[in-house]
Length: 462
Image 1 (cartoon, rainbow, N blue to C red):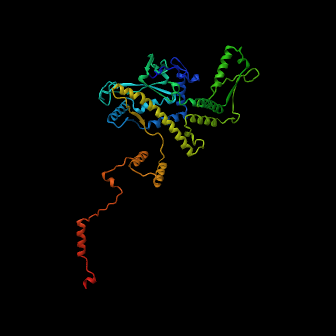
Image 2: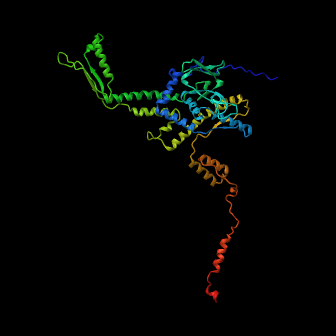
Image 3: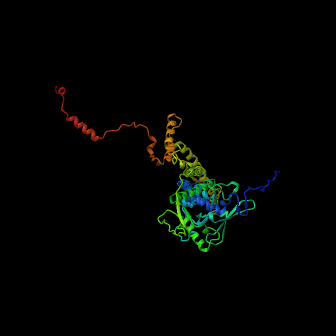
């Protein structure tokens, strides 16, 4: 008799957490909602990070997302058609939903609640039953995001499995506990089964932090160089700890003037003109000019941090040419690597929908879930038509491949050309016509008339 297997789970993933709070991030400033605020500032304030995220989002949004049947059987094709109907029948468009899913790039994860509806026709005023279809089946109404800034805790089971998302209601209505069966958790990384994943900007945080500080100091330095460094002179007793109330008030007023010296359309200073018994000024304000150029070139330092930020997400090709460095071939190699990373993001999104969203919907409708259709996407990579045409031409000339209709259809698809319009007589394409073409009767009559009216030659007269 075979031995019965032990089905218990003994070990754990090693995820550092207490209750529903994850402590995997070693920087306190990047944990939880505090970290969400930092990542939002990085994505919305830094032009390099913003351009990288914008490029990734637009590349993914331009792809064609379709549902492929599990097989060529009629039943599987109908199931795939039903899922695709539900995908594009939501109140929010698929592009809008996909754009919100991509917020996981910034925060590391994106939790979406699945809201269902009854497909009861477009004329129904109830949004829970309004649909472009009226077959009475259950469909997706929407997949609204539950903002990362509103996250409070994660719900775990005894084995460390993710069981749900706890949200702080932004309108003060308490807590919402959303079970994982009613949600979709998209993550950039699933290491240790961490529900918070890992932000795409995590490795860019350090160069961003130093770059931000240097830019702030650079702006302050430029302003001080333009305005001059203000220095105020006043009697020593005004600066001592034994200064009277009136002297402290004058001192505070002068300090405020010094701190607010700026170059703008309202610049100007009103300063007291007071002399002591000897005729010397008691108060004075001067502006010192810059002593010369600085030791460090902040422009090069900031450019170095920009490059490190782009390198952290394999997007440093966007900086090629800005510093008059980099070749075209090097840029192509970097773009190929970047598109592979973007395709991995698309694959992770499709997997969550294929493994969780689609099977649940089929089960709710009592449909067969043994052969589940899959959400697929078109190719992310850029095709160089010149290289493809040269490659095909060389192989054809060498006799390695023979062009046929399938190859033509494939190449037309790569180039974005329309499908060939083939007719029934295209089967004889390339064959020479062997039948003789009879001349019209009208033409024969014209030739005979011409012969009859033609004048005889000298030989014929003799």
